Image (cartoon, rainbow, N blue to C red; front, side, top):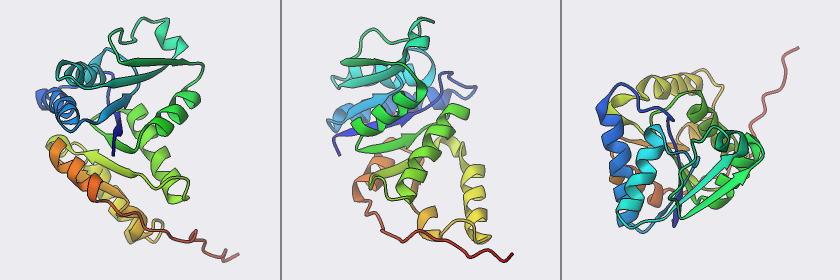
Length: 193
């Protein structure tokens, strides 16, 4: 795995550990000679990951829609910056450039990006590792909700296990490198009506 898309907040949040682990993620990616692919911003946790990987001699590729460039939030010191027209183009290009995906603490945008690549994986559109960096249990409730979906028969257990989780950057990258995707036929339950 040579490149990792990192989805995370454009804010830093209220827990200092989020920022510390964002910095650590950038450092570890650089140490492992993995390129960061991310949303191209200079603010929040995303800016921290990008600054850190660059400070440690790594590469950072940003993908940002032009309406955010106009708000002057793009990172000006990246290895590469791709400016696209729409959020849809942004997500598609990030997915094409990345060989794996990690969600760190974030809000709606982070979850939307995470669930899109999970859905694409479930549908067999890619076979890349997808993971959560579960800093200080940030995603514990979400992971329980996914377990509930599987318990209720609305999510295959194999698809539930498609999402990896670990509290540390080294731990999650190790799990991603060891990931073996499972191919499943689409699960359709006949209608009862």
